[in-house]
Length: 179
Image (cartoon, rainbow, N blue to C red; front, side, top):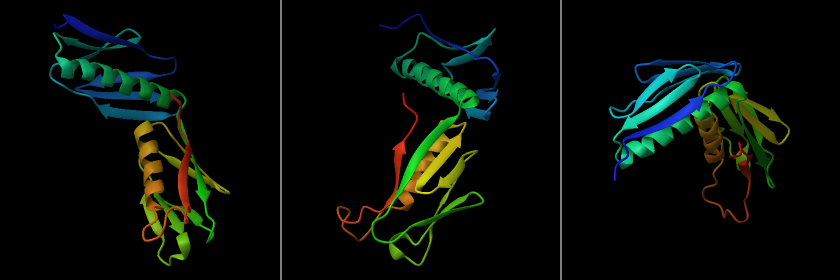
């Protein structure tokens, strides 16, 4: 059975400016600006006062899912524009001390398991990475960029050719934004 109209109303927080332009949602706030393309022929985005409305008329299963997904993306954009997102990672080593550095938009891991070649990974978007002792902090307004950067760093220190039960060295995600 299909519903007549499925609608998700999202209230725009204070100090946040939202613009909708041809399927592109731009959110600007104190922490930064985020833009994302959210377009589907049967899902409509519109502004009414201080609310963003995601709606679909006579939605099928896929459109129902997209209304919820678009609403979640927009809420994440609001949180990112007001508070930002923070991931915490921990540098773990037992055999050879690991050196980390940030060079431009690249995160460099040197001396990992005594390797001569440094392992490098890209820092995505507006993500800011800071290293304090054995902690790596990632901050940014876009949850996807911050999360993917953390995953890239974790993957860059993946151990190949050794027993992972013995060699547990690496950089691991310890804390991420709670839901």
